[in-house]
Image (tube, rainbow over all chains, first blue to last red; front, top):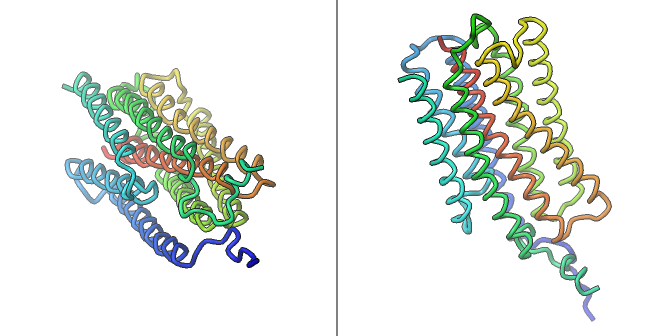
Length: 107
Length: 207
């Protein structure tokens, strides 16, 4: 009798939720751009010593990657335990690989 | 057409990309794949770090790299990551046309990135004679950066194929997981680029 009024529509609660999520994503993006500018500025201006620059650059990169994984790729959301296991497993193997190759070459 | 109905429901679920078993499997499968990709890129990064000073008398990283172009490439790829987030936002709101629009912008930004990379390599080869065979540094550099560029080419082909193939279908529970899987892959390409611009370009400029 009653026509389906919600054909292919998303309810307003869900819509608001998506909107709030999108706001967070844009903030994440702004922060990532800021981190990128800081990283390039430090190297471009050469205001810091090499000893401090490299660890700082790596920290900036790790934070950016964290944003990318947790916000853009939703690792922070529920139901992402298995993906987190995969990525942390991969990162652990990655760390071992990089440390091994660097130590072989530079020790 | 009961099957068709189950994939084109009257009310779209909140997470259309994970509403079907196939969607869930695609989601987990892609993360599994990304775990493996992490290790693949780690071995290339490790090789690069081990060989970056073996220049065989040729140009060094500090001679070659220009930060302006790399900054532009970073902004292009980072923005394309945000535009694909916008595409997924519209997917969740079941707005197919807007999703396609943002995916199209993502593709254009990706193409811009690729054009910059081709220009960069051409510049190194013609102006510095710096090729894959110049030195161990050259081999490691081109292998690492081109592997990433190859991923961008693959991602763009994937995206364009998805957009064209589904242009007339509209959004349903069959293709929503496909778009979501692509978007995750595209973010991962950006993750790898963050490490490339940090480890290869920025650290290569710090002497």
